[in-house]
Amino acid sequence: MPELPEIEILRRDLDREVSGRKVKAVDVPGAGLVKHPTKKAFATALIGTKFTGARRRGTTLCIGVDGSHEVLVDLGPNTRLRRQATKEPTIKGTALVVSFTQGPQLRLIDPKREGAVELLASEEIPERRPEFASLGLDPADEPISWTTFGERLLRREDRLKTVLTDSSFLVGIGPIYSDEILFHAGLRYDRIASGLNTQEIRRLYRAVVETVHDAVKYGGTSVPPDGWVGLDGSTGSFSEHLAVYKRDGQMSPRARGPIVKVRYGSGYTYYCEQTQV
Image (cartoon, rainbow, N blue to C red; front, side, top):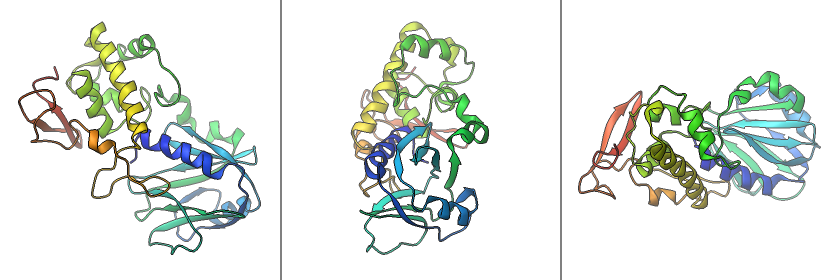
């Protein structure tokens, strides 16, 4: 699924796109997307309301509705949010179309039925989504001190890649950015977090902050064949700046040796054997 930088880019674009716009019509062509309330009740409740902006809880996009409710959107690996003109044809896999009294539509395209949408009163959210209370540090949302980062890191007895991709430690870091962060920090994926020294913690902290901010600056990462696209359909150019992810066999940017690909959990991890220790 999209990782933190891509979700943050969508949040910013959504906030600009939907703030102050009044909902004219809602169409939910398929089944399974709307988790609460029923599909019919969801559509009926939104018609005539005004969207008040977009924020983010972890990797969940939250669109404000009349100051009292929120539409919560969770994207799957192949789910896309798109801004499209009303006259544009509806493509296969379109699962939600929101039309406004003015301007383009907001469409959610979910060909594999991986996404989820809910309409909740703001006061309902803590009870219905208790996982939000245990979210970890969010490097795209607010400044994090390296001491706070280090204190939390040293409590972990797991391998670094596992810790980085744990949402109770860091929000929204997945296979792409964990590999890039570890490369820039010069640390192996299988180092135990609690064993890092102060210098290594500071390098890892700096790599987290800089990698996430650079990825947002460059519009996220789009990796073929089904790479992420933004609200306007544009692809992210951070893929051009990837140092190790899916670059196995290519020369390391920092050493005279190739990037290595190894099995990790249910997937793979990519790293430089010579400079990550």
